[in-house]
Length: 100
Image (cartoon, rainbow, N blue to C red; front, side, top):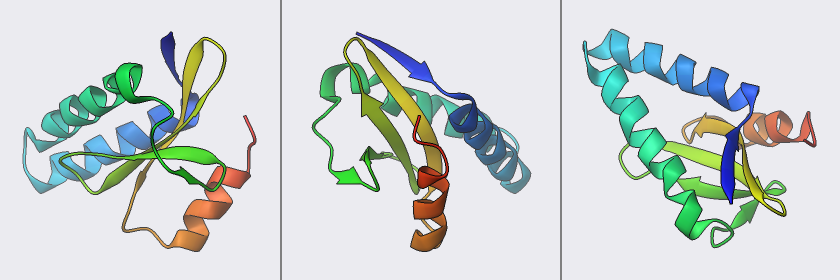
């Protein structure tokens, strides 16, 4: 099993990095380290998370973000990494705009 982070999810991580880096220098790097640790944990826990809007949702351990992913035959595809403080309607539209 391997993890693939799709381009939209990579963009989400970059946006999150810049947001937290503006709050305090170094916090953006901590954000990425934390989120990548949560993404790596999917190798053990993929498929055990609740399905929300058509994807499994893993809530990050240290930041108010959720990792949306799908489990396929031999790959875990991370579709989005979204701030949980966003409007649920926006999240639903974002996740449904592509069914990849």
